[in-house]
Length: 348
Ligand SMILES: [Fe+2]
Ligand SMILES: [Fe+2]
Image (cartoon, rainbow, N blue to C red; front, side, top):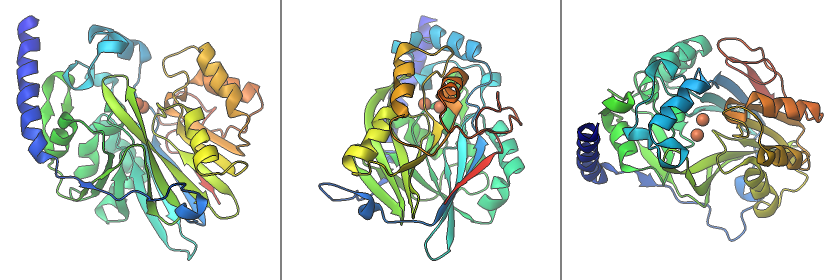
């Protein structure tokens, strides 16, 4: 066991050394304003969100057993730990933004975990065809976690030169992965070298991606020894802000407070979409209950949460009368209480 760990350590060290040179990502200019606001973001007409997959993993017990074997929540490291391959699924969302002039652009938010599973989800939702046709402008990766990023080959097989947008906190193994690498112990494999532009967004800053769409990077240490998550803020004309997350490790209050305090958008928060990381592994904690109670004070008209929000958290929101958008519960999603695999929702 010790010998295996040492081999992995040496491999990572070598990989890390090589990767520093591989980090040729372009750092995007952030919004250079002391107080960015809704005007800085601009407006779009409509946002349509299709949940390609919200199932991060199939069995939480298996995931927690792998996590504990890897050293537990405090010490486990995702790239050098062993994850049960048959438990991998992944989170991925297709976004279509309609501009004020009626033109439409599409992009992906995250690319799941298991590439074979993601390919099935791509085929079921038409994403495979859209990638091949060049209809999808870029892949926006919210954070480095396995269930959002390790299915990269599913995207690259159809469009190896797609533009990829990542947070500036990505670590050396993540760059190596984008270049095409196998991390055998972790069962993380990307056989297709990325050939397109790689853009880093500054953590702690806001970056405008297009009219009505901005990304904000939140700086924090996250479980499995990664750092930083970026989330999307859409400003839809006559509706307000749509907040879109991967896992929301920064927590939903931090996400919403950024809109209220930094963007000065109090009373203009229209909807939420994505994982809210409230009860990802089971029962609702006191802290999670507190977040849910506070969530009611922002005035969201629709809450389309899924993924790591957790069923008990969604049930609590429904119990409190929150406007939770229901789903179909099909194609592997655990429940029809929330937007699931293959379900779509439009704002605007
Ligand atoms: Fe996740
Ligand atoms: Fe995550």
